[in-house]
Length: 419
Image (cartoon, rainbow, N blue to C red):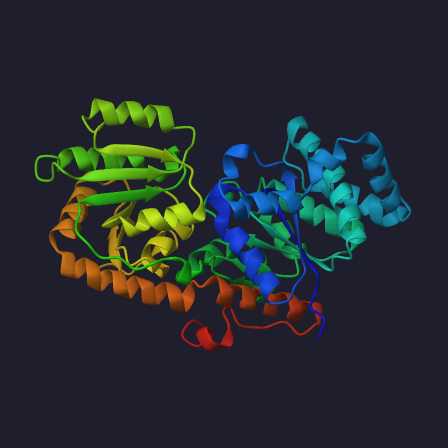
């Protein structure tokens, strides 16, 4: 059987912070799908941190770069104007779903222009299904591309920020017009159900973001090393981590923290570390490749992610695959990955005292850390494995294309306990 040729679209691909999308693409290709990667914007060089990113960047179609050619833009839209009724309806959809105000209308018209270029590329490449990650602007382009070309689309919805402005991003209309929606967690699916019509609920499936567990080696040791991986942005709660470290500094003077990642808060965080007397204990390492993150996990005793808002963080999966217990916040879908007291500790977000206590508890009991690490590895292997999740996503794409879609939220082997 010939598998559908899939195109993948995101606002910016590949990014160092979105390696899970790259893994998903690779897994689908290994299953036999042709996958054409597309990006609205061109990725900056700071994200091309490894050979995987550089290879994907070279083969990815950049929508805005193509649209900057007036001749290419006109030719693309002339192609769809041959069907004036469909073209008019697509333009009407762009106008109808635009956020209020002149700026909102203008942006949706820009997305419409981008959609014409993308749709022409998909048709030229004989793509039969478009899948989008991150249900914001790039998903608007995907929706309008389908309206122009008839090439069906689906999307993965992550959260949490998309649910802060669901009406702005019209996730109701995107869900209605999509073949199906891949929700990254039960929690995420429930949030989308708040805005999607009840008639659409059956096509809201759960497809976990995943990792390749075999990429990560197991390690257990006791060296007082904490690791954080993520964007250095306010939502990640890094100041709480610094305050917790300062609070237990007398008890654990050799405690160290490495931060992998970059972002808008880096300078202020560097200043805060100095202000709290942690300059010698905290290392800012910037973005790292997947292999470098895996190596850093081999040196970590505890992985800490004190976020205020998340989906289901892939970095937690990577830590658990390495046998590193995690300390993170009890928010959104995290509890579907981390079981408190079994594979890590869940603390209230923004609670410095609880975070400090969890770090002390984790560092004081190496046997407990080892048991938690083993439990975490088993969880990731069973439910957050990229190969297994991509196979489920492929089943969804094929099933909907054939008019015989799966009716379960999860694959039949896992859906029994969840339905």
